[in-house]
Image (cartoon, rainbow, N blue to C red; front, top):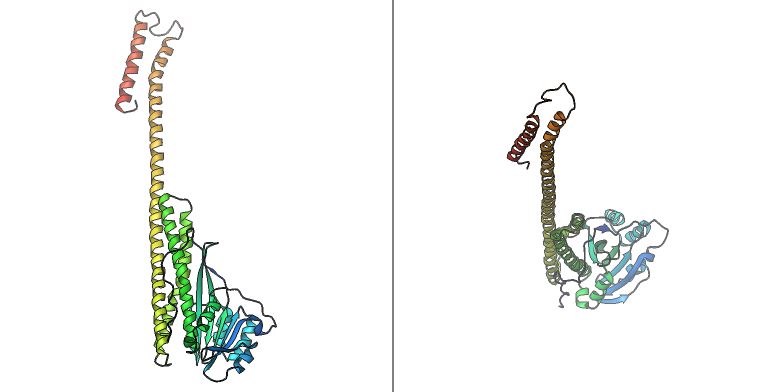
Length: 376
């Protein structure tokens, strides 16, 4: 039996210039309108033994086109409103809780079994080079014994590529709805590869910015951390879902070849989850290093300010010391310069030399004192 196309290698190679992106939901609710469910059907086909036998125009016609239990209808819907999804649920006899989850959207990836129908919620992701952001989409898959109903709330993932791949491999397609489910899982996990590469490139750029002292790098680290967390929410639950599918292999007689395909998808999903966990830890370390570098820069600025203040204080000391030295002879000269008859030492012959000596002695004394204290 032909092998499934191998999942793209998770190598961090991508075009230059990719940057971080904030995580955001692409899912939006549409108003309920009285329109038939077929208006949101983007692809509809009936397969028997891996070959397309019909392209029905309505859901009822799709079910009626199944010649026997070995046939399968594969219906793809894009952003149906509540009424349209309820109409499809009525045709395929879907459980009301699963339909409610598909209507509300914004669900975590999960796997639920309602009787013979599997309900799977997947979060696709893609790296947008133009906006440098990781964009997330939501996909709901109803997998019954003779049908697969997919409900997309966003552009990604591109299920038309999955359909072309399956139609080109009849041996795989004839394995039924489970083969389609595994191919969808394969495509979603495959789509995580460029996201991993983009996030790796963003982290490399942030490391360069941190050590180059680029402004605003803290905000970019925070935003990228949010994207990584959102990416973890999209990928981590996949491991539990895949383990749940593996646990039902024996009970539901899953084909051995499909079991190998699922294990291959599980291996690649594990790599993606481990890389995402590593990204989050690395961003935490980068944020710590950035905080340390910012603190060091602030300490250096404070040290420079302190040194400048110290130098200014030294200058003020020198100015103050010289001002005091010069003030002493001015004071003495002022006292002896008063022109009054009745004052001490007015007619003293040695008064002038005494005044000069007193000025010099006072200045020398102040100079000595200031010099010892380091002011001069």
